[in-house]
Image (tube, rainbow, N blue to C red; front, side):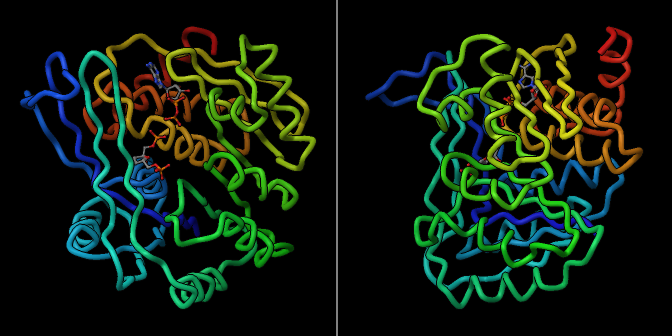
Length: 305
Ligand SMILES: Nc1ncnc2c1ncn2[C@@H]1O[C@H](COP(=O)(O)OP(=O)(O)O)[C@@H](O)[C@H]1O
Ligand SMILES: O=P(O)(O)OC[C@H]1O[C@](O)(COP(=O)(O)O)[C@@H](O)[C@@H]1O
């Protein structure tokens, strides 16, 4: 089975404003709401690609009710824990001259709530895949992903972590199967700004030295670099297309990578399917559909990637 965990699900409120002006009244030209949060996006794209999975996580308040109701239509099974204090987030994604995001804090999760999550995770067995994705609410210590990995250590569960800073650094000694920082997040972890592929590969390898098995570094419109546990380095470009909304591109890439790897165990195929899914979502208003992903997969193959 594949499980995803989203500590901080969200309603993504995507608004388009012509020439956004700070400190003035702006009016939207277009607005949409999506069910978001990194793990939920991974769950949705996995199910689009034919991989059934269960989304775990925490929801609260009326926004949490709506997330719980809405994801029922996205093709995966959900098993959320309802928490009492606070609200699930509404994350604002402002589309104007530039893409600006305001991501909320999320509800208050107690020790009792976290215990319930550990009970659910205790069902995982050898061969299962677990995706730990996204930020955590302020009420939780940033060793939580590490504690989850520690509790599953030795069970043969493949764990994928898509998080930033300490949340990610702390899990590395537990040998996650895959981590997916973007190039900016990779630089931030080491307090540097990275220029060019050589530096990115160098710093990616440092994460491997700290324990990660496979490191996938996404670089938005510049594609991605994969450093595998077999000491191979693959580079991937992007297909042609017009970006409509890049929210969820990284999550789609993670889902495509997992689906591709589970299909035949090939890292090259996983990277290509992950990249096709990432770009297909960047070229869509919401998350990508299967047809678009497969079309871009063929395009990347034809271009020799
Ligand atoms: N502007 C874009 N054009 C084409 N593909 C893109 C674009 N933005 C993202 N992608 C695809 O999605 C992947 C993940 O996007 P990225 O923005 O790096 O992730 P994140 O959202 O985690 O920061 C990229 O590696 C690329 O394959
Ligand atoms: O948990 P975080 O880091 O605040 O991110 C949450 C946001 O990430 C997203 O899952 C999108 O992530 P990506 O653009 O990195 O794929 C949004 O749906 C959500 O609003």
